[in-house]
Image (cartoon, rainbow, N blue to C red; front, side):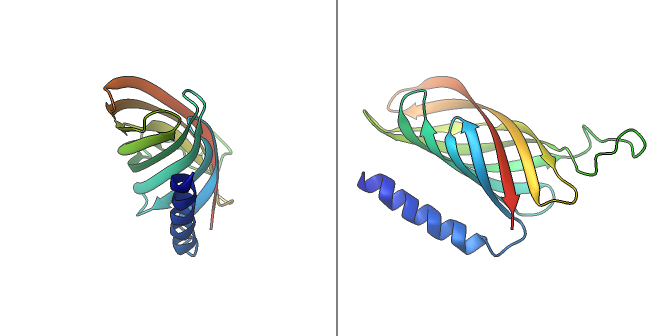
Length: 154
């Protein structure tokens, strides 16, 4: 329980320190994990995101952090084909994840692959992500996490 409280304290300090930027978004995610998500844009194409919450797969507290690269040209839309004003980049990245709680703690890598819709006039995004993940500790295991989320940008 002390690990969880300390983790929330550190996460809160991190979120507060970046909340003054227009490049920082925070929201909710459902899937693995179900909880909070945040994203900080380094520039138009690169970002760092993290999520924290609960993994219902094995009933443990979950945290991940990723470096993401976005590609806007793959799903580029013509101006006359749609009335949507936002952008739809695909993204890929690399990250670390950990789970702790009942039983042994887990540590591993993840490769997030996703699509996001960045609203043109509202500071929101919606995303769908699949992340092939490789557990390294306490034993090697492969699985795929998936999540759907929404973030509001400050």
